[in-house]
Length: 163
Image (cartoon, rainbow, N blue to C red; front, side):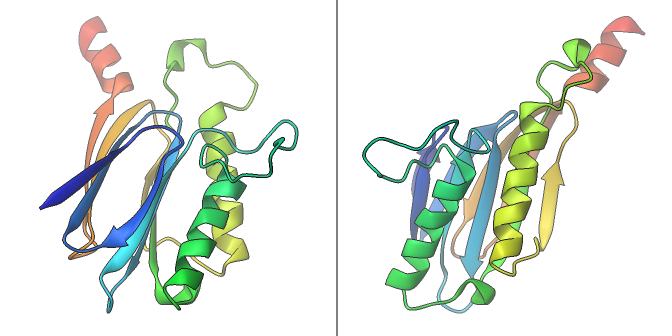
């Protein structure tokens, strides 16, 4: 089976047999899967939005709005609509829980941006694993739509080390 690893900011859309994998900290991944066509994709969002517009107008998967524009382009290319897909949402971890201040974390801002873009398309996640303190490893199988997740909880590691 083919497997593609997504780095931060990457976007991939394809058909079974294919597995998409990534590792998340404060970043957010969204998977979209079409249950009848066995096509879908994953994005790995690094930041909620651009601080200023991009110079060349090219889409950049690091940003939530652009990552969803890449999804929109693929759905159109496949002659399908967003409501035909199963969406799942992952990530937005706090990677530095000891230094968490009163300011909102990058992970929380990424999560808010992802939820906003999903809602714009009328999508509600069928499953999600978000927040907390730690990182996640994901494997998304386009044949079944399953997403396997391993979560390394920094808070439990901290408690174990102290206790």
